[in-house]
Length: 280
Ligand code: FES
Ligand code: ZN
Image (cartoon, rainbow, N blue to C red; front, top):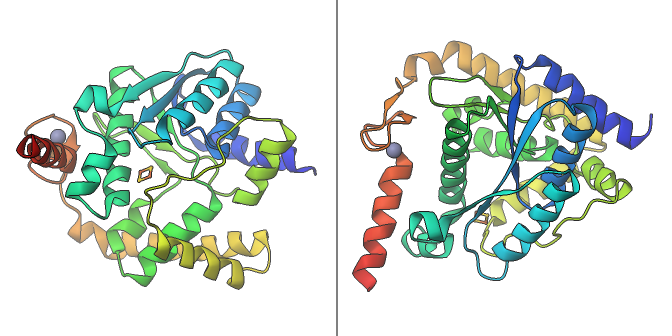
């Protein structure tokens, strides 16, 4: 089977496992992975309504360029890109956030997760689709295992059902290696940004990526390792995590479900804004 069919088939097999949905939000970053995901969805599921969303985080010399690629990708599929500009909407950028939170990557990740959920919820989307692939899953799950981050390990799943105002999430590329997606994007002639986020200081992530490349002699072997990590995560979830699971309650400030009285998004936004005001 050629690479294009393998990638499309794996996505189709995943999507078939989801409960029925009509309107899907696809998070576009301007890169090859989300460009491929959008392209495949329009190709194999043309009846679904798709909302392509780009979050402009205000990263100098990078966000504007990647937004332009995201717009091209949406328009090529006959869709209008929805842009959420963090600077305009929230009054700060990820560059500002970095001054408050030097390890900004994980903070940025949780801000993005929150905003995508808010946009999806307010626009009536049934599901949020992101382009995390096999290598992302392996890296995240191995990192969580090595650091004994049990909640993290258990939480990173290919599908999360809807929970009140938390919209369902699907990661249909989770069994597709990054190298397959790269080839797919090239074979389909997709336009995408090749640069990576310049402020991501993910040295430890890169080390884990290299270690996986040494350990796995083939893409198939990566899938075997991922299955093993999933097995461990399931066992932990059955036997350990339920006892520790925090009850989700509406955030005291925004109302979205959270494990804290005030969700981490609201707490961080407040802290970043007061930092900026203090500097003015
Ligand atoms: Fe969030 Fe780079 S995209 S830190
Ligand atoms: Zn909140």
